[in-house]
Length: 229
Image 1 (cartoon, rainbow, N blue to C red):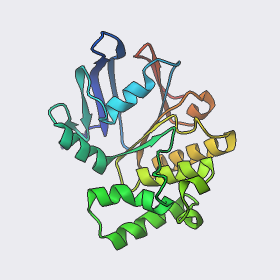
Image 2 (image 1 turned 120 degrees about the horizontal axis):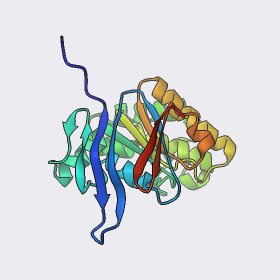
Image 3 (image 1 turned 45 degrees about the horizontal axis):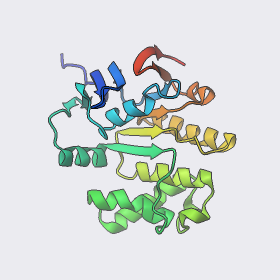
């Protein structure tokens, strides 16, 4: 009998401590499977974003290790981590960080051009398909300043999906959106998880967190509960 597949993402005894001694994340162990939709909640300063940056390989733990698709990332240098992030992880932040001089379409093309897997014609076709799937086809040629807040965030989600990542991480992605647009963004995340993509969202909005399939709650950098919302 073959061994079961490892979880898509695992944190094992992860602690993040600043040089001055402040502990941001303390002894976190969790495993996230493929197709899971996880909300990370907790009071302000509880370590939610710090944990997300560790899980997304944007930061390194002081102790413990992060495994992505069964691969221990502890021994990877900065260049290898950057390549792994580009190929396997998509990020969405509270502030969309779209390049203001680029159209929505060109913003989505940026990570594909960096990865270099697809010819430009195919990359452009994929970018347009992603924008269309998110209701953004008619806005493909518009600059970020010409888009509403909800449209900018959908363009940012399309960009995060550009390289077909196994894992999508979002840090307070609805923090600057009204209720209707925030719900629409969570609808998108739920749909992506239903298609088999793993989605982890940091949010302070408990109503939105309740729409995830699993909620990890942090207090003072520690996981105090982990289960259905």
